[in-house]
Length: 573
Image (cartoon, rainbow, N blue to C red; front, side, top):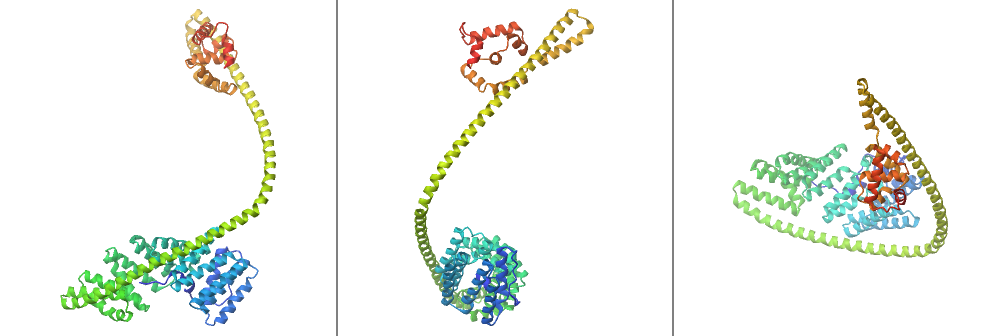
């Protein structure tokens, strides 16, 4: 149950070689072009035994794409990566990539320069120099985000290196974030990025944070990806890690078959450490189940691997299992003998873990110090650039702004005049239209009232005749009279039209005379239109005398002097 760091799979995972120059159509997106180029690099260049042949192949690719700026830069970078990682080694690899980064900067290839930072960080990681590794990867990350290029798919693949650093620091939540960013790459990247390893790493992070359901999910995803790649060892590894997770969850019935497959698959792949780790967990489960037969079987199988690997953690599990096994068998003498060894390796393991914890703390402090320095230098650089650019631009902007301001004021004034003229014309048109509507509506009411008056006269004549056959006609005329006076709906329509011609009239009237009734309000509105009392009576469905009395009551109600008139009052509102 072990795994290579994810980013190693990015460059080292290789399949069968097909020697040929890369065939990358220009119609593809840049992301697809980079994927095709790196797949060719992995399947062709990395499989060549002769380094001279490999160099010539890479140079031929540069020549082939010399007229395509993007692919020319990417081909150049691959050539330099090959020299740094294959022909060099240790610190020389780092020095080679540092020189590559300098050349990219001199050529003005800023994206290639940022990619170099990621590769430098990865090389430092391989040298266990995690502070500089983290610094260079973060530098590349910040640069791409600052340039607004952090979301380009082919650049997202570098997030896996940052995830490895966070995993080493024990910052599992951050590691998950960056692992998932790389996992979100399009599916066609599965020829370059080994998703089985990536998903296994995500699952291990969830396992460390005790989010076991999520861990199980990603171990299953890892197994699926490994099966698609026909990688039997990684399939076995995923099962073993899944089995251990079930064991941590207390579900040993689910853990056993998975761990057994892990043990058998690891032996087949000659991964002795993975086999020994699987055996230790199996022995522990069988002892807890009091199954001494199976426990003894795996103790016998694992013995040679444990002593050959000579690992402190493995010895601790080995002697713990032997101690519990002989206690279960009732052999207390041997149990005590192994208890002494167990205590020794427990202490050793505790010391190692303390040192590891201390080293992680030191790494975090060192990394923070590196990043603080980087941030301070970056802030100083930005401030200097800002001041310089500000001085250069200020004079130019001052002249441009002055000219723009004068021109803007002139345009603004012209526009304001045009808008004012249009507004006045529109307001006049709207007022004229509203007046026409009000006059038309009032005329219709007058016509209706004339018709009502005609019906009323006919009704009086019919009532005088009082003929039996006219009774039904009399009732119909009465209903018509009741339906054609100024109703509430008529009044609302009239009021809306009135407000268009005399905006705010009813609000001002209510403010000045809050005690007016609805009938008083209607009377003053009709007075505002200078309608004669006869027309008012007809529109309101009352008699002429009733209008006269209503006007007298209104004068008293509002204390209108005798020399004043309701017509003058209505005009003042």
